Image (tube, rainbow, N blue to C red; front, side):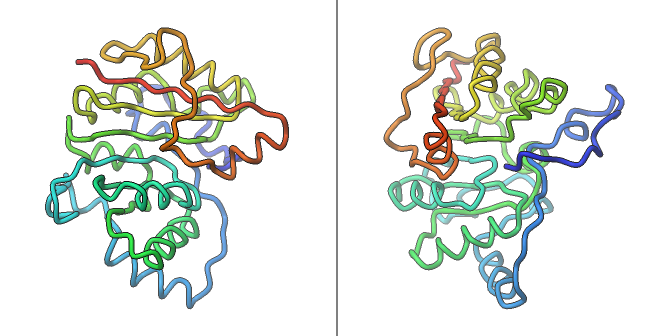
Length: 241
């Protein structure tokens, strides 16, 4: 969930497959000590998932048949850990490309004895395509993604029509896609994209933002935005067919 990115994706031909052209988030620089890396490897072996596992069998992954919620880009994992702890009747899969963030989530989950979280350290587009069965998710969460605030970079925003439909395929009918951002222009972009998507219904009403639901914990992004006088916008769309 970085505010900057290398320009390696500029000039990519339009005929390159979507999964190869747009990445969900950018790998950020970050330090992790040898001791932390050893602990990370130990914990990832217990709660980590990899692309080579192929399409997931949630029963095998979690040892139960509880509904599964997927979060793309959980940052340092604080809010995802809080949600998993507060909702033991749900299973959570988090995706994040920032190794220190994955390590922090695994450490926090381990310290709290939370076992209903599994994580990928991969790009979300690849995870969705290779590992998440169609019509299998109870919910999808996308909180505070990179806003790409410069107009010339808006095409890099992850919320685009094709992405929205890829998400819809993974949701069960009646399940929801929940987004949040502290950038008003990106909120407007999300609303514009999602209102045009077939198969979705805006839970708050057409062209409306949703009040922050109690089940979404306040994040550092939200607190930071509020301290700067920024608003925060939630959007929740339900798959209707």
